[in-house]
Figure 1 (cartoon, rainbow, N blue to C red):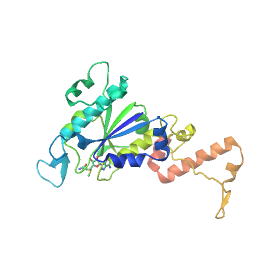
Figure 2 (cartoon, rainbow, N blue to C red):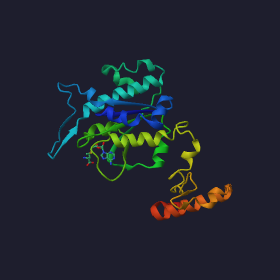
Figure 3 (tube, rainbow, N blue to C red):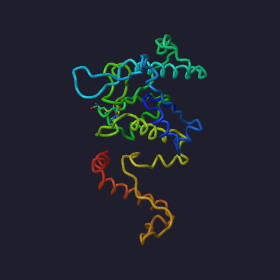
Length: 257
Ligand code: SAM
């Protein structure tokens, strides 16, 4: 799976995603992540990407044109890669961009705009998006992005929660992390993604590791019994109990199924 992150702060995104499981998945070629600097597509004297907001109000807005040109370049790279011309990926010629969405049965990629105004991100959405070959993530900054370009290129508006951040970079990183771990091979143990919180609509049961006794707290006996069916029963009961206590909204939904 290939992630293409359109941002004004590519180094922030790449530094944040380069380590541990996601970094290893990149090294193994299971996923690829490229952060594309929108400022590289600001074809004006000072590489300016923002301007005042019509109608007044505080702050600045990211302008439509640099975002659009950046999107065209990314989409063109994706098309070239899909058509087996990966070596041409840097040959982004503005004059030839218009035809990249036409011909050869090429479909446009999904473009996710990270915005507090979007649908709140869930495990279900992560699963849905993990089925894409390429995913373009668009990070806003300042007061956001000119609505006209959003109307033209965005297919999904996604929020990571009901609060406002300074930029879409952290939300984009959250999506990349959550989606990548669903890509086959990224987690060492395939089973671990299957039984985690939200996967079946419940929070996960409590878990324990060595030693058997820590601060006078003993690991529940059933987990030491080696009796597989009893362990499964206990885990399901605990998952129900925990979900009812901590997320009654999820519990009600699960029980109504
Ligand atoms: N003026 C916008 C509004 O009121 O909806 C908020 C803009 S915010 C300061 C700047 C950028 O941060 C947004 O364009 C978006 O990309 C990102 N952002 C902020 N909060 C977010 C959230 N909860 N989820 C996803 N992206 C967020």
